[in-house]
Image (cartoon, rainbow, N blue to C red; front, side, top):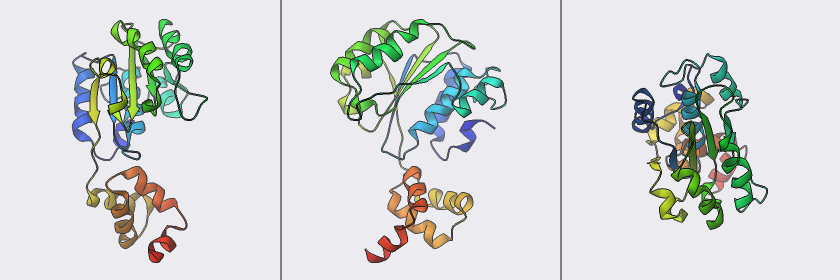
Length: 219
């Protein structure tokens, strides 16, 4: 099973990503923009799985060695940029983990994928530090920025990326998912879906939050 099969909604974005792979028109930089809980991380990981698939299937086969490595977080060609300071991603973070590392060819297959979560935390210096890499990327590289605020990006970064905006899901879609996957009654699913404002990640957290019902009743 491909990681795409576990994603609820965002069909249009998934179709465009699949088409880019099937037509060999993968861009070197993408921005996945959406509120917290919109599904940016899951979508990025599924796209990475497809890009790194040993069988080169447009959705990722989910069965090959490389796909299994990606699913478990052990693929050496999938790099998540980490940062020591919780409030910012600095120039040293991107220089060491991306700008310098990207010059090393893939270990496994044809591509290397870099995911920068909370990319809105990149300092101006960090963005400028990445700019040349985006302008003149190695042929095998793909960089994915995940953000809840694309407006803080430099225009020069945005202009070199393909941007996808993740929209809220229908309340009925979230309800159906919660009832099926979390085995909760429909009235509880309806409340969680309503409070989630269309974001599946938020809804899942509400289901897991033990005091949610008490807070709901009090409110």
